[in-house]
Amino acid sequence: DGQPGTDDDVEGLVMPRRGAEMPKGRPSWFRVPAPSADVYSRYAEVRDSLSKLELNTVCEEAQCPNIGECWNGGTGTIMLLGDTCTRGCMFCAVNTDSKPPPPDPFEPFKTAEAVIQWGVDYIVMTSVDRDDLEDGGAQHFATTVQLLKYNKPELLVECLVSDFQGDEKSVEILADSGLDVYAHNVETVERLQRYVRDPRAGYRQSIDTLAHAKKIKPDLYTKTSVMLGLGETDEEVIQTMKDLRAVDVDVVTFGQYLRPTEKHLSVVEYVKPEKFEFFKKVGEELGFKYVASGPLVRSSYKAGEFYLTHMINKEREGQARNADVKDS
Image (cartoon, rainbow, N blue to C red; front, side, top):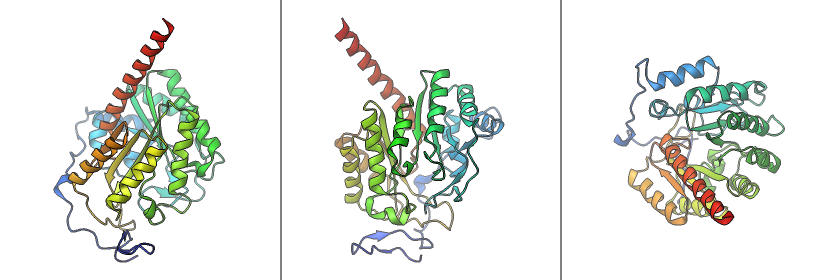
């Protein structure tokens, strides 16, 4: 705790600290529209349907700044396996406990019902870490995906999941469930992992998880997210992108780290929009199929979902056409 200091390992590099001095004033590019108060808005519709079905969203639990924009667009990110995490990462506002309540066995059915009611084309499901469960909750996710696909086969499903403590069997259960996008966040560059994430998480473990999902299901889209403004250098961000491309990750998103409470890591820097554009350009040159990069981008962000929907459907139509040509 205290001031942002130099890294113990590499002189001159900055690491984030709790209680460190924050940058002065939030920049002008952080203005976002407030959620619509209109009772007939899509925001109100999403909020009410979630409330009736007793479902948690990461939008609310993690205090996401884009809640108005996404919910008015009819996109919500559902949080499975309860609202209490077994890990304590220094950037996250979600409740933590070593022994959370057991998962609701009916949650996959409730979730499928809610999503079908919304009528969305693309749904993101995420969860807290559940290291207390033998499979980390992989089967719970897989059941939810299977119910969604059974009820609406054309629905595109993204699961943003934990690293399952590196357990390959859990990765396989989810990768084989029928989902379209397997997402797991590396969160930050390799040097800053120990300051930002819980000790049970790790850079290599996260990358290996994404690699294994792709190995099990080569046509699966893999996706990850990186927070900026924690003291990383340009070179470290670019190296992270290279490491991700080395295991054929398809999609990466970059967003600004915002401190949820004073108990969490202080922001080291508000990264300028031009820098986000620079990383977007580098990512595209490195071969990512899609890069979402901007101060308010979050790993589940509606603009990215619109693009992914179009990209996945277009690629699958192309594959179907090629198959027809081969058969004829």
